[in-house]
Length: 481
Image 1: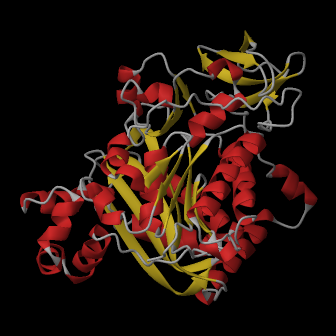
Image 2 (image 1 turned 45 degrees about the vertical axis):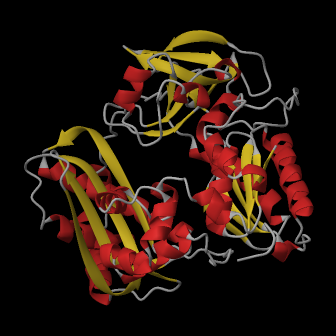
């Protein structure tokens, strides 16, 4: 354990929802929910205004609509979120070479590696300056936790939410952690918490008092020993600049169960192509193909196949995924499909048999096509009708006359658009037919850089964090600002 709180944990406040509020002036100060908006969608992020009504992340969107029917329900715009995230990560990398991103909106930073003096006043000043810089660069707010260990820094940032900073002084860890519920500790999920509850263990202090031997008996050697150390406030995990991904995967949940076998196969092929695209974008290859099938009754099956060597060939991954699908009964209906690749490597070792089969298939298609231009013209496929446009809520659009805006809603052949920008006043709403030639999808506008450089936060911070109980338990050892 470090003798100074030189590990920083940053967690952006309600990141996706706050970014949408910053981009859409008409939504500022109002409840916003980002996630899947269909009947089987799940909430990704809810603004603090929506959380007042009980809306939480990972909640079914249908339940969120019942709790907060007047919220704005928007599809995620990951292009925007990645842009904002990169700006934030640049600020973190300016503080230290050791930055460990956990997601788009969360990261650990080793301030000691960046030359910050191992003193509470110095690290506090760095944390406060970081919060100001994030607000200036992105218009969003973030919460900062500072401690001598990663686990404690993350607990501190949670206690600081929203838009705050909490320092946990080394030596006060056990006093702070004691009254907290055992779910506070990393690695304690619902199943582990239930096992501990049945043993009469509810808080971190009770976990420490149970002793290592009892925790090992309940949870096994590795999990029990690790949990005992964390209950004592011991966490020597270093901040790792590069986190090596173990797998790449994609999945889709369908609004209506898929019962047609051909449609299921088509979706698996499409997911395989998306998975390979992500694999190649990361400059990786993999040797194990995995499919995931969730049935109508929520039962979930996974099947995997290990190839002869790592590959990033879409034909090889598609072929393996289809073979795996043939081993699964989908006649009852499928609500979710996923395709993934694990066993990642930085090189490829092509499956020669699959490659030969692919080449032979291409040759056969060329032979069927014929050599003459007349034959080629005769087989010219008729152009397929262009599918109708789908205008998802939150989508960026541009109108030839009215400029940039976003989709507020659509249905019965109409699409409603609110024309405003991140730096404008709340805009006017206009309605168009869905196939209006003057309306087209647009790109996200930057949250900063427009005519209005106001630094007002995109969310309204609460005056008192929901974790204040933790702060009062530790007395003067926790500093809050």
